[in-house]
Structures are given as C-alpha cells and as structure tokens.
Image 1 (cartoon, rainbow over the protein chains, first blue to last red):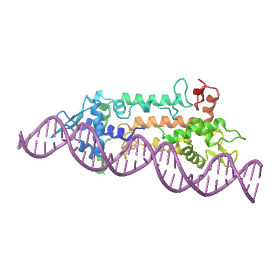
Image 2 (cartoon, protein in one colour):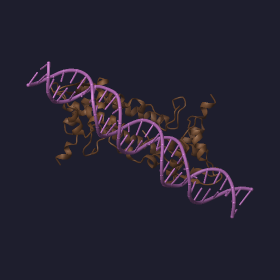
Image 3 (cartoon, chains in turn yellow, blue, cyan, purple):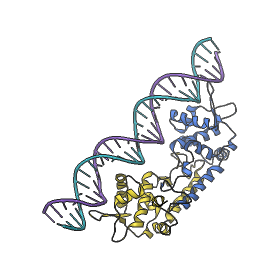
Image 4 (cartoon, rainbow over the protein chains, first blue to last red):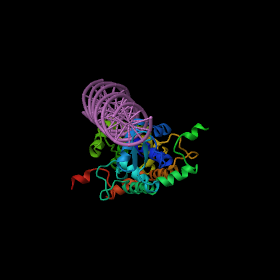
Length: 149
Length: 149
DNA sequence: ATACAGCATGTTTTCAAAATCCTGCGAATA
DNA sequence: TATTCGCAGGATTTTGAAAACATGCTGTAT
C-alpha cells in the first residue's frame, strides 16, 4: 500500500504525537529505537515532514522533534502525501498509462471507488483520533507490549 | 497497489481472454507488442499463470496462450494472488510486524475494512465481466484507440 | 526425420528504494 | 567562547524488483 518510508513516517509521527510535550521534544534515536527503524533513514524521512511543516525540529541538547500543529489538525493524508505523493490515489489499477474517465480500463471505476475510500479514510483520521485510542490502551504503536509478555 | 509484474499479468490475461479462440492461441509477442510490455519479462509472468492453472501454453507453430478455464470462472483475485501473493491483504498499514486483531495498530480496523473491500472487489470480478464491457466499447485494455485518434 | 516456431528457464544487468556512512551546522550549557 | 548534543544533508552501498540476455526444450509442419 505505502512505501516503507511512508510506513516509518506514520509510525514516527504517531510516536511523536504520543510522547512530545510542550517542554519535551522527542529525539530521533528514541523514536528509532522504540519503533525499530534505521536511525539515519528515519532522519531523512523526518526532514521531509519538517519541510512540509508537519513537524518542527530543534537542534542541540534537549532538542528533537515535535508536532508543528495540534494533533487535531494533522491528518494521515497529509503525512502520506508528503512522503509518497498523490500517485497512489491516481495510478491505474492495471498500470495503463492512458487510463482516465474518458478511456477507462476494465477496472477503472471500481478502483476509483476503492482509492477514494482510502483517501477519505486517511483524510478523516487525525493524529488526535488515533493517539486517543492508544492512550486508552485499545491500540498500539510501539513494540513495548511484547516485552512485558 | 500491485507490483508491476501483477499489472502486466492482469493486462495480459485480459488480452488473452479477449483474443484467444478455441482454434487460436495468443502469442507472447503479440501480447507484449500490443500492451507495451517487455517480452522476456512477460514470459516469466505468464509462466506463473500457467503454473497456477489460470493459463495453458502450447509450444510450436501456432502455439501461444489461452485461458485454462472459462472466463466466467477466473476472478481477478486469483490472478493477483498468484503473482503478488496474499501479503497485500494482510500487511499492517503502518508496517508493524506484530499487528493483529489482538494488538491492533491505530489504523488496523479501518485498514482491515479497506483491504477487505479491495479483496471483495477482486473476488467478484471475473474476466468475463470485464471483457464484456471491453467488447461493448465501454472500457479499454490496449492502446489501439490512441492510434486512431 | 528434420527444421523451425514459440514457450521454458537460468543468468546477468539495470534501476530505484532502502539502508548506511560521514561531515557540517546550529543551539544550549558550562 | 568552547564544547557537546542532536538535527541537516550529501555521498555511498546494499537490496530486490524490473528488465534484458542467452540457451534449451517441445510440438507442429514440411
């Protein structure tokens, strides 16, 4: 569905949304360790999210990353489109170069509907919605629950 | 969504369903030329579809490929799962290794629904359904319409 | 039987995503 | 103001899908 970069980016921004506080940025290494993501690779992904103004970064001691906006105001679609672009929502299902509404491929309409469903889901989900369920213990973003078992 | 191999495989089996007759197999090169697919690469993909008994192949003069079963009895899901496997329908949306119903990631349930939607669509669509619309001129699998314009 | 058309199959090469390596730069603290 | 922490960002290596190459094998027709 998404590239590995995008998956890492989603994990990371969720981790940041969960653990950053106004007085506490979240360090790259902390995210990489907890989410089992190659640190240098994650660095580049977070740079993208900073450039797209989804994250802020602070250098120096006690530096790190935090959300640029409130968690309520960041949707998954913004994160995905920043990293993977909008191509996944436009690409023909069987890879035809000239497939569009005027010259649809055999699965064009069905896939258009499915892609729109995905897009709508990503657009509706904010980081705030998601971390709320994590804080309630209903969902998980880290592997910590595996250690305690 | 799908790998390039899978996209090529879908294009090819649709082409075969459209052009093969009981007395006429469809040659590899014909498919490759009309769909603009690298011939040697397509060869390997069609081998997979033969192995999975979705196609039959005949060697020698006037040889080529034809559907193993009637077009009514082949679904897109069979083609996709033969080439790409079922991983796309099972993989966690944010790439967590240990995401399941018991320990769901924040988007697990939403994505499960979306993946099931895709799976159901692919399961419901048979080759016969799709080539019918092509023969009616409502949809397209080749690039021929581009030449005549 | 022999030639040849056309699929089968193993190997190599290309290319982009993923991962790693290394150096630079800015902010905080002593 | 010197040091160090931690992000920025360029360059390189690795990996696997995609593509290209080369050869073998089988069935048909002459």
